[in-house]
Length: 329
Image (cartoon, rainbow, N blue to C red; front, side, top):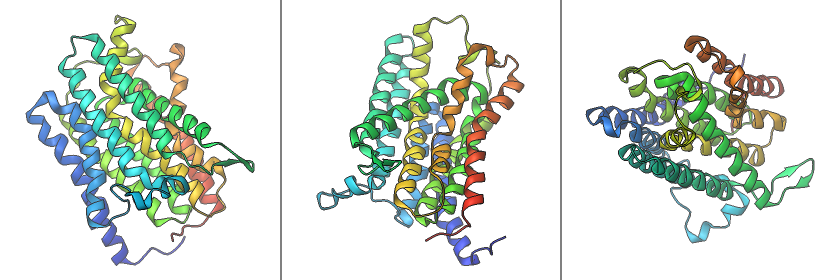
């Protein structure tokens, strides 16, 4: 077992990284309890606050790249992680609020869904590196952008339709633990302190934002069908998805882009499958889109969906631990 870092290092991470991210993520959703109509829209705002607050104390990402730094967008696309994630979280909060405010109008769900999908596609273009290679073959940036954007959209939709239906009000804290643990493990074995800190910050922000709904939001009823409603029309289901997808676009953009940035900007013996498995963990949930595989019992549903979500993360952690020792630089 490798030696632990000095206590001063651990203390600094707790004081300037973990606690600010947890606190920033927690306070805004907690304050929104006084105004229930804002509770769901407060989730992406809380995640943004939790992600941004540690950056105030120790800047790990530029808030925005000025004109003199535009070349970084092409060589190191991960430098835009903060503005891209912030854009999706802000848009997600706005669309969630208006979709719920006008929930009686089905078209608002479609509008919210369309705007968030457009933001995810734009984020894929924004964050896709121009030097991505596969088996020594250079992948053109537009192709990489398209693949990344489609993956982000699929992740956001699966988190909305499958994960949220299975985990309910505890979906955010449970996802933060599973996806965060896998991402942090991979980052630290890829020998990057910056990427490790970013993974910790976002994981703690999502966890903090999820505390209020997990313990203070009461379940109105238990549903046994995917999405919770068999009697709803297709249009109503789309409208419901549109009002919720904004809560998930931030993590759906951040974690895949972070792992891709780590894979293309660090040097280690980790196979690409390690980063791939950690970055797109929620895509494994697509198996539950087959109705016959969706458990009817709510308790079994949560267990099965958690196992399926965790499997790619477990694979990523096994590959990381077996191929590299812990080290950061």
